[in-house]
Length: 271
Length: 299
Image 1: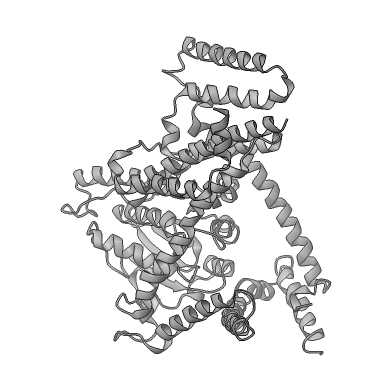
Image 2: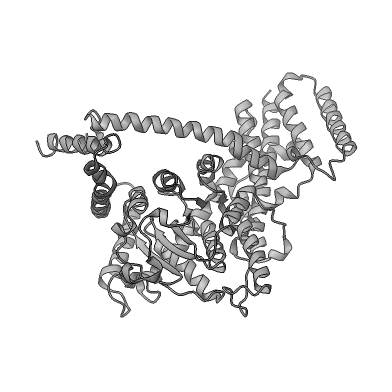
């Protein structure tokens, strides 16, 4: 019990304080420890963790198959894949290259399995995202409220702005898009449908007339170019949002680290 | 019209899958049918200019942090960056922080060697290192003590015997760092643990989904531009293709005169992505029209 609980907490707290103090105390031995020794220790422990992860994976899926838990059939494929790759990595290599470097030898069975089985399968899994994103965006991107409309507008502009087709969309299409979005926002305020559509067409015609008068077809302003709008969305609102999230995460890490170092957070011990 | 939109609202998702499949397949099989001009993004231009500013003999550290699933998106930019670097006579050092990284790096280098564009030699013009477990801690180690973690190269040759390793002790001995990233550890860790504290210029190429997380570092100047997903790769390929074609005419000593320069894979894939994106936008518009009519019907 002492080894599992108290000793683990003592090691955790002392290492936490030691690693942290290296950044605040001007003591060369301590600094040397935090800069060189501690990272090396971490790498060794991480190596063992990878080994433990493999054991855990095996244990979990064997149990699932033995107890015939839900979807146990898939575990057979996981175990088969795992065992086959282990065999080709540690038992059978099919080349004269020494053990270890054989993993990178194009003629080895392991490399063949990676290149012609795993690589296409992993790429296929990732490519499937395109189909699901298309189906999901068709169903989820709806003008339900103000926030959803903002998401839809920025989503559409980013989708078009990031690909070459966005650059060939003419300015007048963007003008119609702006007017359409504006009318989509105020649609609920105008009860008379006739008034709504007539004003929609009039505003569009007015904007297009203004555009031709200002010669936007020869020198298009940046706010009418989809790639430029996309760049602005990424540089300003997206950056602001990302920074806010990053600051939040950083504060969370500080709080969580403090809880771990002071021994208050024990979930990492399996509690 | 109203009936059409209402029916469209309940369209089977398999029909959407089929249309998306066709929109991707047709431009891939027949690229000539959909040829679109590629506009260079500002961030891609910054990356290109940063590498173009490097001098002959400069040392660049490349970090491979992607795997099989993200290969179609990140790999073309890795190949294009390598071509750009070798054409300038820059020494390349490759590390991998993902288990699949060394294989990706080898595939990229194999492609470069097979192209017969450059007369490069392993251990003299470039060096590759194996995967090291530890993620961000490996980056910290590279920043402080490169030789502490890398004792031998990819071919198990001790680094003391490699001419390219002379004078390499920590990240500050590199003139530039470039990170090919598809997750964690990735460009954020390179900024936080190595390049920002040690003031070494860093650029990155990453998957489209990572761009939003990386953009704050680009805007603050901690990342010198970014190659954002497949479009970023295609833009960079285009710029490198034009540069190499010019250099070939100018008798660049690092480029073999009898070699063929290809445009790259991302360049060809952009038309497919364009059509797929356009189709998605059309779906979204039709879906909203259907939603509007449905709501009106319900009152």
